[in-house]
Structure formats: C-alpha cells, structure tokens
Length: 434
Image (cartoon, rainbow, N blue to C red; front, side, top):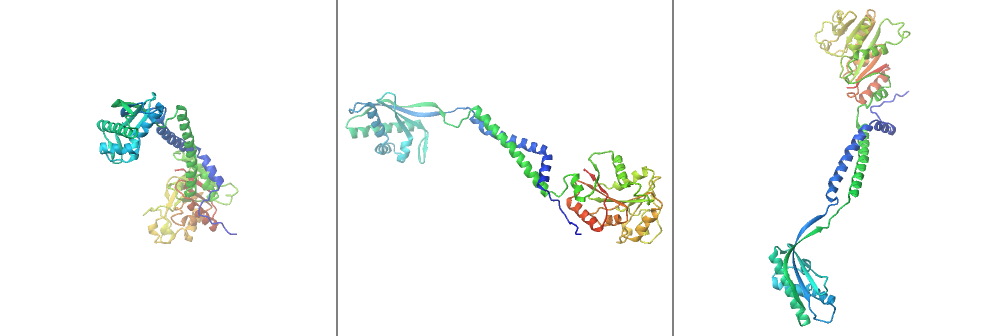
C-alpha cells in the first residue's frame, strides 16, 4: 500500500470559515476600528457644511444713471438701450482709449454689471474690485472709480453719437460701498449630516469584517504553524495526551496523567517486567519533559532509570558513551533519589560513532530492564538528528512533545512520514501552549 507523503497543511473552505467564526472578537475589533475611521472622517469632512452660512465683504463702486425721454419708446426699452450701449464693443474701445488699460472684450464685459432698477427709468452700474483677469487688473478704489467714470463717459459719447442728443443723466456719481453677501456654498441639514455619518459607520463595520476575513484567511493559508492543538492531532494522527496552557504551574498533575496514559493496561504489560518509554521532542523549548515523567514514575515508588541522550554532559562520571563503544566497564548510574537513577551520553567520547543505533545500547537497556520497573529515554529533537527514531525502535512506547507556537506543520508531517515509513508507533502527543 502506498503511504501518503505530505509536508504542508491544506485548509478546506469549511475549515477557513470555522476558524474565522472562532475569531469573531477579531472581526469586532476590525469592524470597530474601520467604523471609527470612516465615521470620524465623515464627521470631519461634513461638519464645516452643517447648516452654516458663509459671508464675505464685497468692495464695490456704484453709479446710477437716469434715462431721459430721448425717444418715444417705453422706459424699459430706453434703459435697455443704454445698458446695451454700455456693454457694446464700441464702448469697450472708448474705455480702452480713456483708461489706457490693455484688456480684451470678454474681460471688459466681466468687470462690471449694469442692471435696471425698480424704477423703470434708472440703471445702476456695479463694479466689484479688486479685479485680476490675466494681465488686466483693478487694484484699489481709485482705479475702480476711474474705470467706472470711463464707462459712463464712453456710454454717454456713444449714445450722443447714435441718437444725436444726450440720453441719460448721472443720478449718482460713482461712489464706494461695502456689502456683506452670503457666499453660495454646499450646505447640509443636521438630519443629512447624521445620515451621512451613519452610512459611513455602517460601511466601516462591513469593511472591517471583510478586511478581517480576508487577512485572517490569507494568514491561515500562508502561515506554517498549527492554529490549534486539534490541528497537531490531525497532522500526527495520534491522541493529544494533554494541552499545557501558558502559566500552568501544576505540571505535577499533568505528568501524572502522562504517566497514566503511557503505562498501558495490565494485560498489555503482563509479560513485561520493565516498560521502556521514549520522549521524542519536536521543536519544543522545554528540555525537562522526560525527566519530569521519570520523576512521576519514581514518585509511584517504581524503580526508574532516566537515560538522557539529548544533552552534552561533558565529563560526566555516569556517561555510558565509552561503555557502548566497548572501551570501559559499565558506569554506575547517578542516584537522584531512592527510586530514580540517571545515566547520560558524552558526545565528545563517542568519536563520531552512533551509540543509539549500536547493538550494545539495546543490550544495555535489556540488561537494565531486569533492574528497573521503568526506563525513560530523553531523545534529542527530531530536527537535530535521527536518534529519537532509533530510540523508538527499541522502546515499548513513544510519545511526542512539542510547543504549538514553535513547531511548524512541515516538521509534524515529516515526523509522521518518518514514523509511518519505519513502522514506529506513536502513542500520543503532549502539547505546550507557550
């Protein structure tokens, strides 16, 4: 049968939805942040236009003309004729001659307004200054008065030239005036303001949820670390012995459960005087897991041997490295207490040889099995070398220990692939939430 070989975790749509639903609090935070941002922006952008009228001070020159009975036409028609004369191209040329200013005809028409008043025979000229149109400008009141007088004079000359007699009298000579006018601008009511802010907040809530879902989904797909303890169980396809939360100080009770889990039933151990257990770390910063398990068995008054294969222990008198190589007699274990002894390895003495895969190491464990009720082997990390797999081959039970925030999915899958290929049985996994 072909064994499936996997190196990465693939999430289904259902799993992504389930993980996102578990992070509802993160969606609420994103929704609140986006709602505050969009709502705040809407408040700042709309508040200046909230039922506010803007005004500006207008500087003007004003002059009033009275139309005489120069024809049989009505008053409206006579005033209209005067207004058209004032805005004509001929009047424009005369004003240029009088003022010496350079401007085009369109600019001339934009400079002033002439309107018929309530009285049918009266026309009023308005010139607002300062004026800046291209190269043409009227900077102050003197220039504005002079330009208005030029318009009146040019219109008078033109009207006499056309009609043959004086058509109007100056009722009010050009004079300065200031007027406060309301500026036409965008304004909204308070109700419209509240509706606009509410829409922005609603849009922010929806945007925040969408952003959270998208970003968290991408993180799920791209992140290489398991998102939950259950995901570690799925990768290794073994039971979770326990999940040790961060800050859990009652580890003694945890290792009692680990010892009980690995002990097995009486029928299973009926023909075994000694049970050999291998601790297989996988990217776990905790280095004393196997020792705490050995201490738990010793506390049950079981004669226990702790075999430490993971640390250096340079020059230790209870190192078995030279004994496994056949260079000296079997060393005496280090007695940690009445029920717990310890031996270790010294890699400096091994001269590059692999003592774990040496037949004398298995023979050593077999011999010690006659003296002890339990042997706990502390293997090196599976990332460092293959000693953990070799130790599992000669032990009765093996369990994995890892930290969820340290181990990645690839390591878990590689471990699973290796033990499946080598026929190694993993009893369970102990997970630290660090």
